[in-house]
Image 1 (spheres, helix red, strand yellow):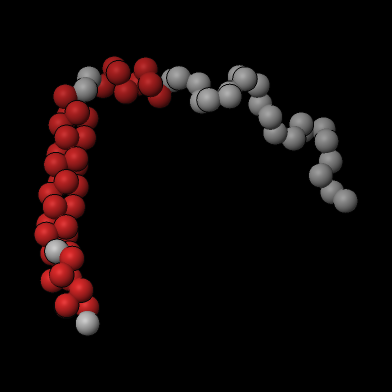
Image 2 (tube, one colour):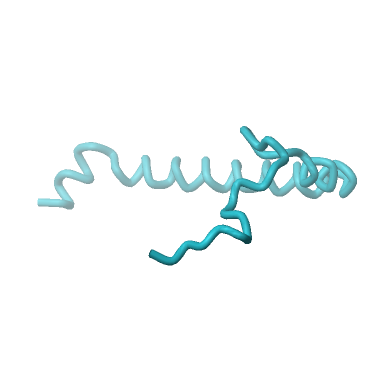
Length: 67
Protein backbone atom coordinates (compact mmCIF):
# COMPACT_ATOMS: atom_id res chain seq x y z
CA UNK A 1 0.00 0.00 0.00
CA UNK A 2 2.76 2.47 0.89
CA UNK A 3 4.71 1.59 -2.25
CA UNK A 4 1.66 2.28 -4.39
CA UNK A 5 1.07 5.59 -2.63
CA UNK A 6 4.70 6.60 -3.04
CA UNK A 7 4.74 5.72 -6.73
CA UNK A 8 1.47 7.55 -7.43
CA UNK A 9 2.39 10.73 -5.57
CA UNK A 10 6.01 10.88 -6.70
CA UNK A 11 7.27 10.79 -3.11
CA UNK A 12 10.69 9.61 -4.26
CA UNK A 13 11.14 12.74 -6.34
CA UNK A 14 10.02 14.95 -3.44
CA UNK A 15 12.52 13.24 -1.13
CA UNK A 16 15.37 13.89 -3.55
CA UNK A 17 14.28 17.50 -4.09
CA UNK A 18 13.99 18.17 -0.36
CA UNK A 19 17.43 16.66 0.29
CA UNK A 20 18.90 18.78 -2.50
CA UNK A 21 17.23 21.90 -1.08
CA UNK A 22 18.58 21.15 2.41
CA UNK A 23 22.08 20.58 1.03
CA UNK A 24 22.02 23.85 -0.94
CA UNK A 25 20.70 25.79 2.07
CA UNK A 26 23.35 24.24 4.33
CA UNK A 27 26.12 25.12 1.87
CA UNK A 28 24.79 28.68 1.57
CA UNK A 29 24.77 29.20 5.33
CA UNK A 30 28.22 27.60 5.68
CA UNK A 31 29.62 29.90 2.96
CA UNK A 32 28.05 32.94 4.63
CA UNK A 33 29.56 32.00 8.01
CA UNK A 34 32.96 31.32 6.44
CA UNK A 35 33.03 34.66 4.61
CA UNK A 36 31.82 36.74 7.59
CA UNK A 37 34.53 38.50 9.56
CA UNK A 38 34.84 37.55 13.25
CA UNK A 39 34.37 41.21 14.22
CA UNK A 40 30.82 41.11 12.85
CA UNK A 41 29.94 38.10 14.99
CA UNK A 42 31.49 39.73 18.06
CA UNK A 43 29.46 42.90 17.43
CA UNK A 44 26.26 40.86 17.09
CA UNK A 45 27.05 38.98 20.30
CA UNK A 46 27.10 42.30 22.18
CA UNK A 47 23.68 43.43 20.91
CA UNK A 48 20.93 43.46 23.56
CA UNK A 49 18.20 40.88 23.32
CA UNK A 50 14.72 41.97 22.29
CA UNK A 51 12.98 43.60 25.23
CA UNK A 52 16.17 43.70 27.30
CA UNK A 53 16.04 46.77 29.55
CA UNK A 54 19.59 46.39 30.78
CA UNK A 55 18.44 45.75 34.35
CA UNK A 56 18.49 42.42 36.10
CA UNK A 57 14.95 41.05 36.52
CA UNK A 58 15.77 38.31 39.04
CA UNK A 59 14.91 38.03 42.72
CA UNK A 60 16.84 40.55 44.84
CA UNK A 61 19.33 39.00 47.26
CA UNK A 62 17.60 40.34 50.40
CA UNK A 63 14.25 38.82 49.39
CA UNK A 64 13.46 35.45 50.95
CA UNK A 65 11.93 32.85 48.66
CA UNK A 66 10.98 30.43 51.46
CA UNK A 67 7.28 29.91 52.20
